[in-house]
Image 1 (cartoon, rainbow over the protein chains, first blue to last red):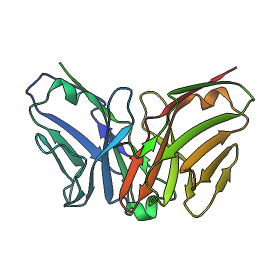
Image 2 (cartoon, rainbow over the protein chains, first blue to last red; image 1 turned 90 degrees about the vertical axis):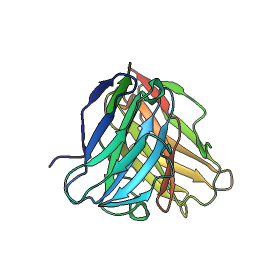
Image 3 (tube, rainbow over the protein chains, first blue to last red; image 1 turned 60 degrees about the vertical axis):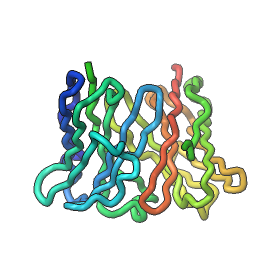
Length: 118
Length: 110
């Protein structure tokens, strides 16, 4: 009965490398959300995906960042050519239906991936 | 754009007393308001929510109050326990958009 699984928990990358963050939603959940938490700041929405579809990517930087949620396998958040400003905690959340249904009970978050760019 | 604001970065209360965490929002179109609790090195966990058509929702020691005219909500924890020490995030949602505040770190002293 696993919850939302994120891996790795910690990721260290040198400037210019690529970072890949994985998120497996809860069983039965088909909606995935990625959030970023910068130090001393709240959770910033990045992208909302359903299987094989990006529903809303309005919070994602236009360059270097991409996300996918394939038919099989986990959702992937990819950051190319990382810079120091990308250092943050990245949280994934899932819900069994869209936010309109989740508004009353929220959705389930993973434990996050802490990305450090050196 | 900070549509959801938590103006107090930290709050310290004595065990057994009431903790009141506050949150303000700017968008009157939000239809649900939620509180999440976060421990270090863990993801946020859902605590309690309230629909925009209500002004109060209670769940055990936790009560959320909504004042739509003031665009303000608060979370009351009574009585506070040391295990409540965590960062509390306020969130507001409409359709597929959920916005979070910056969080308030609550410390409950024994």
